[in-house]
Length: 404
Image 1 (cartoon, rainbow, N blue to C red):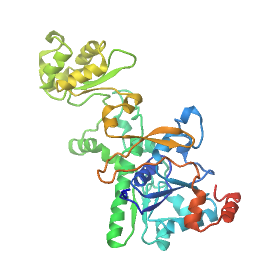
Image 2: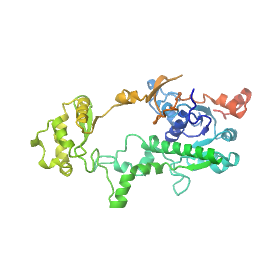
Image 3: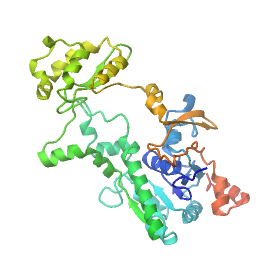
Image 4: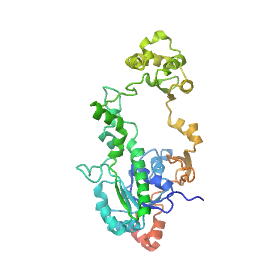
């Protein structure tokens, strides 16, 4: 079997919830041995986050947790105990990477700040993914993806004009910028260590990769002095652009006419007679000026049309369009299926379920996913392999509330 890119790398994973767990999942799917340190005394909140398999709650039944923690091992160590902290230090001393997404004070409280870890493992790659970094006046604030999106202005840009912000519907910071930036920074640090023998400290404030998504709005302000505002499904130049309801129950199509050449094809496909739109709609500026009138005409024109068939027809004529897909549609999307995106893994409690594959595909060393771990599933074997504990000592530590 081909070795994966990160085979031989061991990660002590203190991450929980979304972004941190997704970051270490990317490493695990790429071959790293990721040991997730968690505890039944303070559960990873995602273990208690729906959807649950068959709607039945349980720490090993969350689809969200399973998808974000593939290919890992789970040990339960109560980090509030001095014995638990000592075990964690022994595990880190044998690791290449230690990762956490706590506020800065948490790892220091455990005696596991970067400065302390470096004393007994100078080659460590230490990844800290707190919300706002380890310096600055707001360093100790706790937050999650939705908090971060609001904090950096994302929610200021999402919503319908003259109405309250609505957010993005999902926590982009958790799923896109933060885990991927952190994963690639970690890989770069591992490469640096391989070449120089020196470890690194990666202090990634999760607000900052998220700010990077706002490039155009930031530039609009710094260059033009203009504060971007929410414009719903509209565009500052393109029109028509929006989401329009089609025939059927909750069926919608997204359409954007992005240049003057697309306009004649668009009117032909929708069978819009010239009498229904002003002459100036032949230009981008004219269409945008008349966008509200156009939206009303289009809403009527597409109301009885099949969304998928209409999208196909528009695409064939060079007009950007797409049916608004449901989760079921995405699962059966021919392109995703053809690329092997969905991976089905068998789980002791959830049975065979679908998981996202990695967001990249390596041709020679493609990722290999295994199912997410049950809570504490590997505690005993990790204690034997890396901590030199025998069953009697493991039983004692369990009874004392350390390995729980």
